[in-house]
Structures are given as structure tokens and as C-alpha cells.
Amino acid sequence: MGVALPVRAREDRWRLAAGGWRLAAGGWRLAA
Image 1 (tube, rainbow, N blue to C red):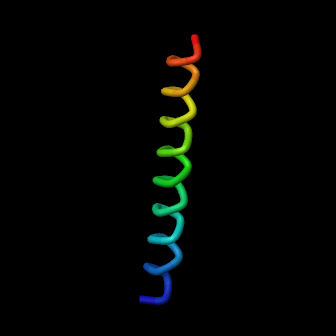
Image 2 (cartoon, helix red, strand yellow; image 1 turned 135 degrees about the vertical axis):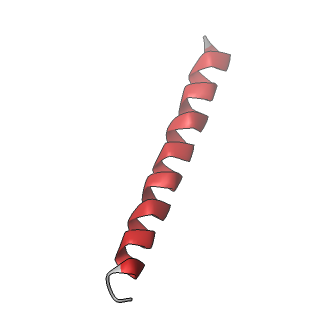
Image 3 (cartoon, rainbow, N blue to C red; image 1 turned 120 degrees about the horizontal axis):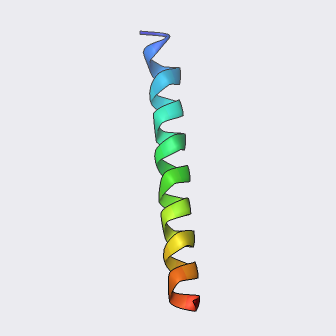
């Protein structure tokens, strides 16, 4: 239980990071 929580937090961080990169990539595409 104690180990599963940190893992979830890491997954959420990666999901947010991936979403941010996707938005940034989309912005560059529109700008270009």
C-alpha cells in the first residue's frame, strides 16, 4: 500500500508532463 501511492504519483506526474509536451507541440505546429 505504501509503495503503490508513490508509484501513482509518479504516473500522474508523467501524465501531466506528457500532456504539457503535447500542448507545447500543438502550439508549435500552429505557430509554424
